Length: 480
Image: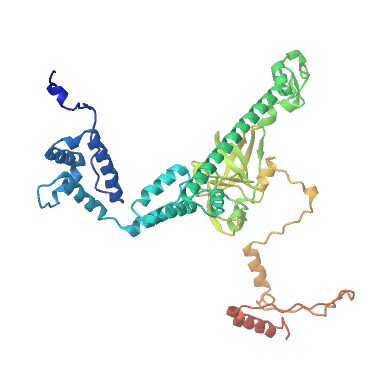
């Protein structure tokens, strides 16, 4: 009988290549105990795969200190051992170092305030809660406390309502309900998006089948003619203006509505004289900032005009009595200096630096206007076209036949009112007076008289009110 060879006597070893130890241990973080627990689990798996238990103790210790990294090696150098350090004693010291820093109260605080994030799935949320609960030392209450945290922290109120309706809710049942609700939500969303896609396809096919007369006219060459203003085929013989004389320029082959000289006329927009502006406060109904990106659309009306061939965005303000523009837009222009005060819609005032007359072109019809603007030294204010200028430029129309017009009586200049007060100083002495005679008032006898209860006066102004009433009695305005 043959003796077994030496190779047959030894157990067969599996040679493993490409196996690396875990990454170096980081000894910093909010939860050092959990960091150490995960790293230790990786080390134990590596030790099994690399068959370290068959190696000498010195080799195992050296391999551990190599894998633990610089931070772990620094921690090892601070440890003390009674005998020669072994791998088990080193692991115990690291365990004590990491777990010894654990604050159970704080760990439970972190666990109890953890809610599901908006984009976090229920599986990810439960996994995170399980990891946090390991350092909370819940003991036998682990499953019930984990269930309560899921119920309170889930971000879907419908799912929470369904969980609270369960009388004897276990942890497994709680997880099943959450996962089912999440899956149903995704399925409904997918079905809704598919319905939208189908509707979009139907609308597209419907538009393709619709008859578009404008497209047919463009395809057949029917467009608005620049000589007669009517729509016809772009053939010279089809134009009714051919051979006709313009009533405006007396030239041939076009109508007056399309005459080139029609738009060359400069229209003067008259505004308040600058001398009047300097002595009075003009009213601006709305001076608003340009809408920010993403904001909702407002009821304001904007119009693009050209000043020196540069586009300027104006707000058409039917409540403003003057036109305004910023100093930046009139650089190099002559500004008539003068104190001009602008009163805003909220009664605040903006001081202007003067007035300036500019030539404004409406690019939509190439009409030119000479408009006087009040210049303000504030680039944040939107340029305005006031009520009078907007009407004369044809931007807005006031239908006076639709309402009763009310004439506005403008006040006299301060110099004139002062001369009147000085001339009749005996009348305008600042005191109250009475007209001669007696006024007879008639009442409707069919109306039932009524007495309203007195209004309550705040205690803080009672003395002030009493003093004012006593003063009015002394002046004869009221009688007790």
